[in-house]
Image (tube, rainbow, N blue to C red; front, side, top):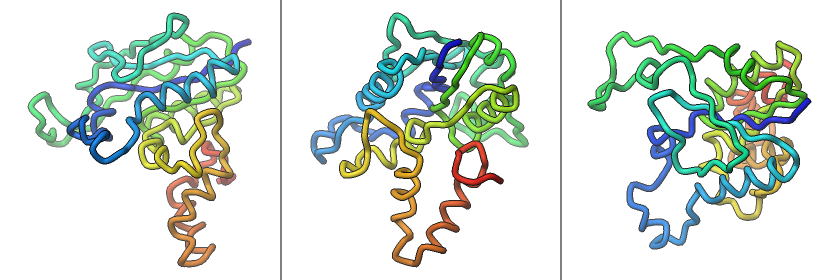
Length: 206
């Protein structure tokens, strides 16, 4: 049985939201470009440790910003981006919109016999959580690498913290809580639990 890292919906619409509007600003402000760092993480954390990399995207969207390797796999979902997006093609918010989600069973079945599944991509509190919980309920050893979800863009520049070769949940927790620790540990913990209380994140049982 294999180990799989499942990267969800790395499409232009989601990724561009977190990028500087002008690429030259990365040089001007001496900020590292994020997408090469994601690629480095995929290699060091997962490919180098025997994981297969599988990207999930919509049938009308290509993988954006990351170049899949020849051994990687790309899954196309059963729904289009438009069916899932609250924004129409003209950039307007749809009225009375209810998003449609991909068939998770199809995604899990496509992966085949999986011993261990790690999930990243967009979004940590929606699709990543939904698919992780579904897989875990099917008896697959499942976790979420929060640093490789949309949370990545708020943590990767912390050079004294972020490591491309490993995700340590306890270190992640300490780093996130550090922003509120000046108000006391209990308040910092309360804020952290507000964001990551679901058991699938691995910090709390309920």
